[in-house]
Length: 107
Image (tube, rainbow, N blue to C red):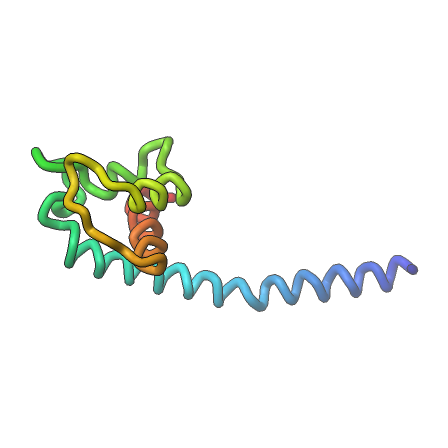
């Protein structure tokens, strides 16, 4: 393979990656928006306005925790907890809520 052919292949691959990046970004924004709506409907009684309350910490504080990752939040949301209501979420809702919490935490 010549260096010109290698450059063409590299630029083609880069162009393909860049072409799909806006779609991923739009999907992330949509997922965060869905998570925000779900949080407003189901979570804000305890996790009010991202402020730490006497009931529960806000989502910005949770999302900013060093231990807060997409995986750790999803595992947490799939588990029952003594101090939380047993809200059953489907996979899409868990994905959306995790995206929203991480977004609030600046991740």
